[in-house]
Image (cartoon, rainbow, N blue to C red; front, top):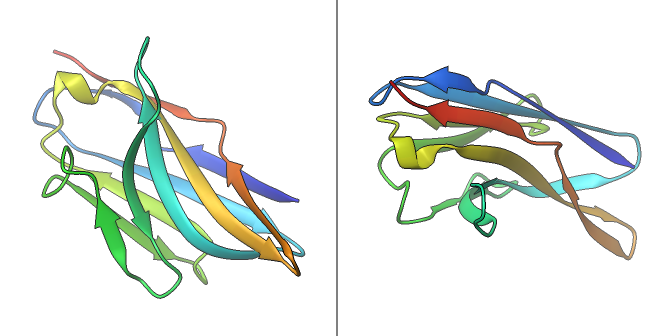
Length: 119
């Protein structure tokens, strides 16, 4: 089993910043790529960013230049630094981990953290 615990969401004014954290814990899975998605009300879940175990990153065009993904703590914690936030960034933000154990490969998702951008 893999558990992902997210934190750092909240209410921020337009133009402000937030940093989301996602800590993964597991006894028997190897964590490979980790990433962030978000889902606004009535919308599909949207890819934001990913980071591989080797540190390669990829971003959605909608957040490129404003959001930065990083990893720490033996690569079990992933962060999303969000700058220049806009009202349209309001959503529930989820982290995801691509994990492997032997021949089993599985994605695990966090519970989500609410980000609200409003004045």
